[in-house]
Structure formats: structure tokens, C-alpha cells
Length: 149
Image (tube, rainbow, N blue to C red; front, top):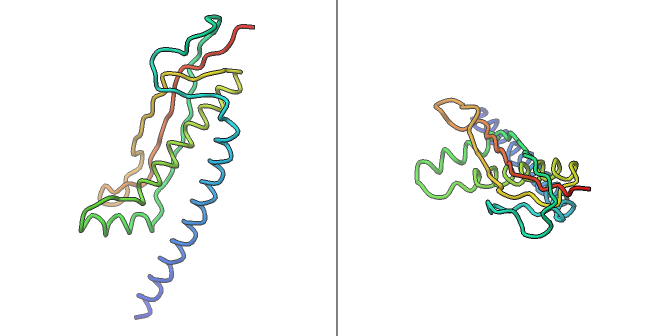
């Protein structure tokens, strides 16, 4: 009985700390998205029309985010009955948005006006027990257009 109480307590603490860390990360993402909104990142393969006096350079952003124990536990339960794994969806959403922000930061440091041909790659880089997801990496990359001066 005591083991069950300890397990439930640790699970609840993991849930609380995980939600807190996730909400802080989302707040940081929203703030930086506002700041970097002036640099559009578009998936089109064709650069925006306008002044042809641009240099281009590859820019990228990468992030690795691990799955916390609570998300893994909930996903394991979801595997039994099927359905959406919203705990993993939020993990991937945060990772993608963070990778795009890091790519845009690199573009801003180059004084770029646009990033086009945006691509995202996602990979599981660490497997836990039984090939469960441990960590995911998301890489965002594209071509930055830098005005000639």
C-alpha cells in the first residue's frame, strides 16, 4: 500500500512539474514569436518577388526535447485503448516552434528579411525501454534572403 501511495505521489509531482515547465516554455515561445514576427518563414520553394538584390544563405535551428515520465505513462495507457496522444502532440508542437524560432534568430543575426523553402525534420534520437520514445529532435531549415547593401 505504501508503494502505491509513493507511486501516485511521484506521478502527481511529475505531472505538476511537467505542466509548469511546459507552460513556461510555451510562454517563452509566444514571446519570442512576437519578437521574430518581422521575419516571415514560408514553405514556398519560390522566393518572394521584389528586389532581386539579395544574397541567400542556409539557416537552421535545432532542438532536442525529452519526454517526461508522466507523458510516457499516459501514452502507455493510451496505447491500450487507442486514440490521439495529445501528450506527444504538445511535445512535438513545442519542438517544432522552438526549432523555427532558433532558425529565425539565425536569420535575424544575418539581417535577413525572409526565410523561404522552410523544411522541418523530426527524429527520435533516444529510445527508452521497449523502444518507447525518449527524446525527439526537430530541425528547421530554409534559405534566408539577405539584402545586398
